[in-house]
Amino acid sequence: MTISRRAALAALALTTSLGFAPAGAQAQNAEKPNVTLGVGGKALLYYLPLTVAERKGFFKEQGLDVTINDFGGGAKSLQALVGGSVDVVTGAYEHTIRMQAKGQDIRAVVELGRFPGITIAVRKELADKVKSAADFKGLKIGVTAPGSSTALTAQYAMVKAGLKATDAPIIGVGAGASAVAAIKQGQVDVISHLDPVTSKLEADGDVVALIDTRTEAGTKALFGGSNPAAVLYLKNDFAEKNPVTTQKLTNALVKALKWLETAKPEDVADLVPAEYHLGDKPLYLRSVKNSLESYSRTGVSTPEGMKSMYDALKLLDPEMAKSDVDLGKTFIDSFAKKANAGS
Image (cartoon, rainbow, N blue to C red):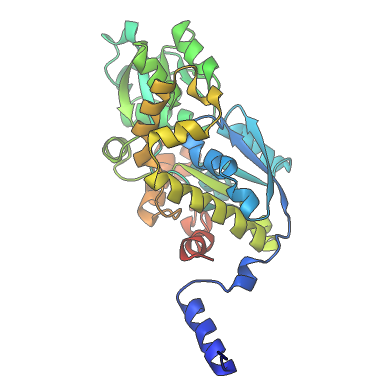
């Protein structure tokens, strides 16, 4: 069977109009096939889509060799990006707003979490006295790292409750076993953290949760709406100079999100390294079940969610209150939209 040139062109036009790139475009080589990625606490379920993309081989499918540098918290990942030691970061969306306010053109390209997934809990011994964020004054609050999204959420909760963001010391406790130990050993009074750390402490009876943004209801209760969490962000000039590489990174992460949408907790537990279970696989399964609702479905942040985060920053930070950030410059949605279309 022969196909005329006109018919072939018509077929190409149809596939393009439907959002599917021709095979030649899919096969484009990445400008930078070796990519260094920074993350602050890779074992946390906040960053599960990254681990899925890595372990399922989705980056390699795209022709990328991604080296992942795991830092103690999101703020340190951001520092690495600004300093040039990593190319891209999986970190909190709010960092893009803060950097735009400082005149640094850092943008997200794919949303990994649509809800923060952060739980704020108090040590059980203090639960009879500490009933809400209004009672946090003077207490030691453990977070992954100062300046990270866990710190922001705790401080936002305090300000919303009528306190100042500086009314309680913020203490970095790391992202895994060290965070669990900080509560068990009484090094901190309150912890603002993520699964599986949160579920481990709850299951052991060490804490009582006061605020839970793992669900849509809990996120709305604190922020008033959806609130973008982890994203893949980078310097805008990286995306401009390496559009194929950026697209391939996005493709891999969107594929990970699609996998998570239908995955069972057992599938996730079997996929990740055993050390992610914190020595308790049944607990890890519960943690995954608690967190699955929080992951993005499309990789594209909504304008409402982006505004919700900006409003939170304005309330929390006097310098941000005076800022005028164009939120359209904090998120390039074209890469995730193309990934969803199959390009």
